[in-house]
Length: 90
Image 1: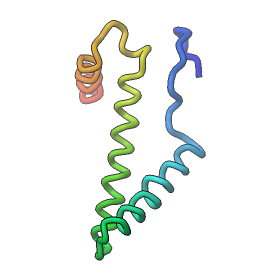
Image 2: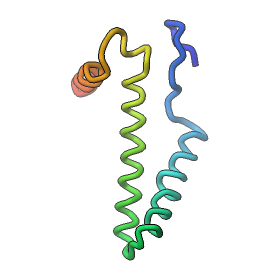
Image 3: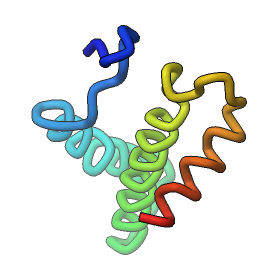
């Protein structure tokens, strides 16, 4: 997707990408980790599922913050700090 400034930007998570992400990060990865780590309780499985979904969400937020057109002569750390402050004010 090309933004108004002429730069290519990352599309928000929606549609088929969201469904595939939930299936992979919410079901497939937790089940694989559950089996590989030889865990035994359902709470372990649910914890692994919650952590993988949370990390996927955080990675998506960070990737939108660090998107190249949004940096606009700012360092990544400064961009994260300013965007975090802007989101907390909303």
